[in-house]
Length: 338
Image (cartoon, rainbow, N blue to C red; front, side, top):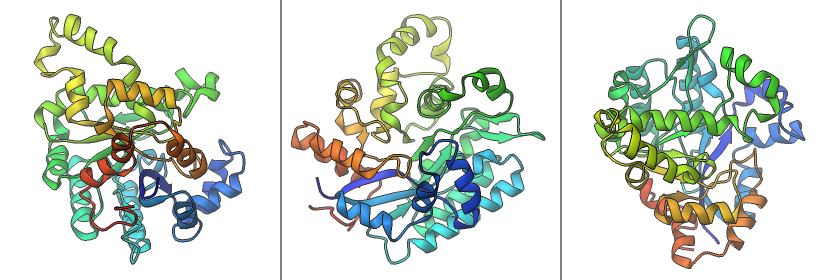
């Protein structure tokens, strides 16, 4: 399929190349290759896009990114630097690249202001945040965005009419020590990423974020971070047990309604046709978006799989690019009509 749109695609700042290579050594078979690919915007990335039928990519700063910085001033300064950098890199290539804003999530007002700046000044397509924000004097506090003090931020997201991508990051501090340190091979895509994002997203559901902001659109990756598989069970316990006990005070709709009206999932890093078939049944083609998760995953694995997957042409076009064209209000992007 030509003209696919991908939107969980990472970049890093070249000035952190040595740090990136060290970090990549923790998970990448070839750390040098990963570092080169994540620092490249205009050359190898476009070559991959052309070779594998990807017309347009929305770029985002690599995890854990600013969410790993617990000093508020340092986090905000880095977020601004990242946003200015990627805006400059994308100049002249707006038909191939867009960007998600990087945000420090220490303060709702500050995060809202930076998102507004990026959308209005640079035409960024929304924001991507790496789960909870580390905070506190030793970085052991976690800021969730599902409490009423974050309503000001969510009001700005809906006012700007852009989506918010809730992306995973690695566990840190005492949570890492108590839960994951002795199970380190489960950190990341095997388990911890899905656990963190699922908790955060369901916190937003049960704490009324989507009821207070019914137009809010949130994207999660990796075919829904295990949630589509559990929708029946979640719905059963919310509707038949939790709501009679009081959940109905903060959660007005069913979990399926939130997925139909507020939540999107992507194929990033999860190239399984049986899993996609389940998501089509539980979530529906109109709420699924193609993505790769490059350079953590390869263009070939993602694109060859999707292109060969047996889907009717309506659903394949919707997932491959149609849904993204509508959600992000994309105009004359490369491969739109291919």
